[in-house]
Length: 213
Image 1: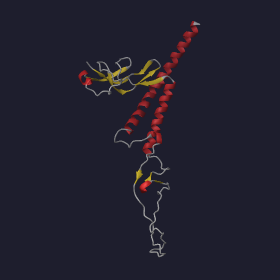
Image 2: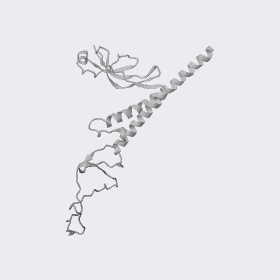
Image 3: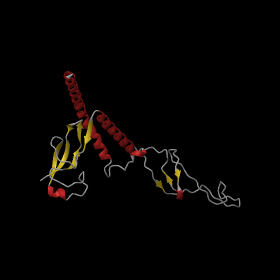
Image 4: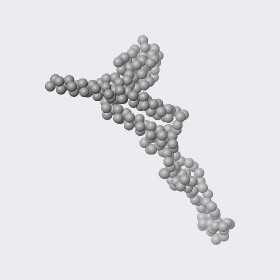
């Protein structure tokens, strides 16, 4: 019985070791996708994209279109076509790509229903879905990310990149530090790169900023 238990423990260790090596190699790809998403959604880089709507942004444009001809109710015509009893007529024109605009009040037209999403929005959506799929696959094997902002620095799980003087950290805006608790020396004030754990062990330490003395 003890031999079977020990063999099972060793088997689990070998499996975790194999996963750790493979997952560790994949984390660089995950980081690259995260950087691409942050760069694309940074202010001034792209227009805001609503991924829930498939990357299609809606809006309205104002304007009126005049009819092709007008005439009087007496039956006389001033052109080649006859007029209507009201004296004026209006017509709407379709887009050059055949899309049908949606009429709205005050003569405005909204974006066509069959308009294709912009290339930038479609690309961003694809990168975001790929990133989520990778995280889901890693989680199915016990690999999960963690963001330790607001926690106490632990060298076994965190890598200190910079230090913030205690006097400066005390004047930081409320809620800017995770947890919203009292600022203390050794507290993590910012996470530059998320960490990853494999079950109950650290796979990659998080890169953080720490409150100094």
